Image (cartoon, rainbow, N blue to C red; front, top):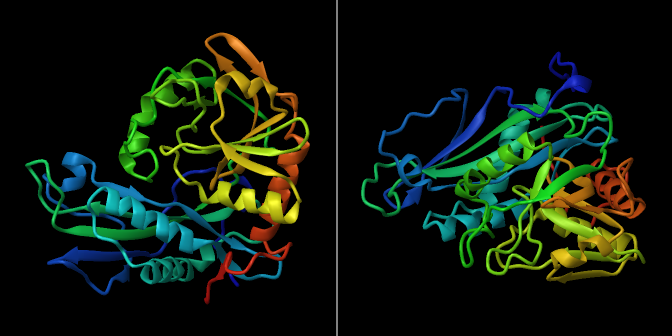
Length: 342
């Protein structure tokens, strides 16, 4: 397969326009057939629901070139299911699961020359999203919607290896009790922007958000779930109704149990016990696992036993196993790998 003339090894994690994207419109109570288009611009009313009341949801996944040369995506069915849950929460129409997977496949196939070669460290990032496009002036759901999928080649989230990061315990709340923290809505990420800019300005890489009710329990960061490793190599993940159900975290939990034989517990994790863990990682599509070396709670440093030099040993095994599955080096569980016909 021919690839675009791109310096794949030096790509950063940013947007680059590709050839085609998928667009489908919801009008008069039904989705149209949808199609691939070349135009990357969107025309809408100044009073569109997405502009007035942030009625938008999205997903993120990647396409990879495997060791044997196939182009695949990872568990797109779960992205479709999560988008459905997000849409229902914001009173938006559901885009059918089979059509979601087909739209993703069409976009990857149409932009196959942008799928980086195996071993380059780069991937094709895929962004499905939906938004209210018809005019809304009173506070109510839009009547018409648009579903789109675009793709862009991106480099590895970490240049030069995944070095442990330093995060701070945030004074801001990521989500309200009984709010929208468990769906992938644009408004959740807008809520985190001031907090992450503040953290960066103070020299930190990310925020740790606590539960908004008691501010004693660990929830997540602005865009990733937490995963902790105990000193006797057991996995612990925080449990909360306002945590986004990360597909990467769910996959890592399965890998921990079924591939590595580790014990896994999902339970409330208190900030007061974080220093007792040996390792900490942030789980997400972009980096799979971002190792955390230090957490700062209003001047008090909580240093992980794994240190600031490299991933902890258990985190590294989890990372290597899951990326091995994604890249075709390790046999995948049934249904995890969706091959793209190009």
